Length: 273
Image (tube, rainbow, N blue to C red; front, top):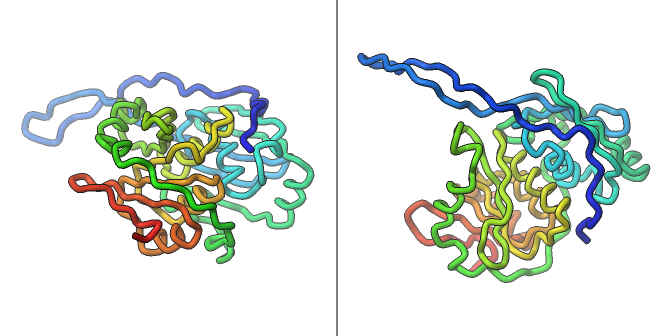
């Protein structure tokens, strides 16, 4: 069940307002201008005093990311096992000291690995093949969202991506509720980071992830399927075409998977028609 009591968070980090960065256009006119660029920093995650991961992230909704990462990486089984999060910033580096339950900490020590995160595939640093291709419980079947909830979705997404609108270079993960409205948006330089932030945001708000659907603006990689299944989403919509492997995993685990092309109707890959 979703957690109703928020996880205590100390020292939440707000992204500082950036001045524009000067540039010169590479043409005969050599026009000058200023651009706002996406911020990036290193985030070290420490569980009960043990360093676990270093990720490159956008420094917004950091606490949501920590919760979502902890759940989607199976460090904890539920948000109730996260007792406290303390976030600190030192220049371009962030640190999150996370207190988790004894059960989760024991399991973490048994399966501990050094994970070096990137804003790319999201699997870098995973040493064991079984961690890249984990055993996951299948979801209960769920109906597909109404087709009209996908109408003009790309345009609606662009209107709520506030960070990307100013700087670009950011992926988004969004939650569309049962009325078809975008009710939550999280952005990050990494597509898997954005989804973790969304997972954490939904959990902190006590939202039922099955009462709506999730949208990712990025390539639909296998790790996003892992996170969606572990978070018990009913439907994942991707703006980029899925790979054959992601389709097979979505079908095997009964995750509804929809691709929303630029200029044609939505394509339902899972369940099979």
